[in-house]
Amino acid sequence: MNMIKIALPALLLFASSVQAVEYGTFQMNQSALNFAYKQMGVPMQGKFKQFSAQIAFDPAKPGNARAHIDVNLASIDTGSTDANEEVAGKLWFDAKTYPLASFVSSGVKAAGGNNYQVSGKLSIKGKTLDIVTPVTIKTDGKRAIIDGSFNIKRLAYGIGTGEWADLSTVADDVQIVFHLIVFAAPVIPSSTH
Image (cartoon, one colour):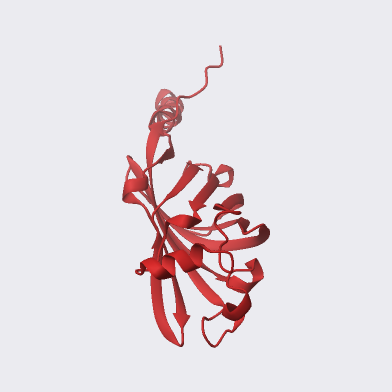
């Protein structure tokens, strides 16, 4: 009986170390980065077609998770070629001067179940502000599916200046919605020898 009491915890520890995984191989072709806003009071949507992510997430150690996401601002797709060119221009993103928007995480807190709270810094057009976003992370052993959204004030980043600063034309609130797929790689337990 004593042998079973000793062996069982050891077996469970071994099994958990063998099955430990860290999700870190980003899949751009299965991921999406969308946004929503109001123009003249009418809901509008768009997306970014090019972005990259460096993500490390171990479900057993969520506090150690890291994320760095870069978005190619010139890859914006509003559904209109003319609008895409306008938004990439100087009054909006000024994508020639500031080609990338970046998010760098500074902390991840478990919030129960598959829910987490991610904090970090979002940089757009030379301005960096703090962001906190709720995130849902579902894992199936082979991949992690990361979903979340947060709102920004576009004028806080200088997006849409000049005539476009009129909030009756384009609202200040912009919702960012992300769906990220990250594949797993087995974590090899470190040797103590």
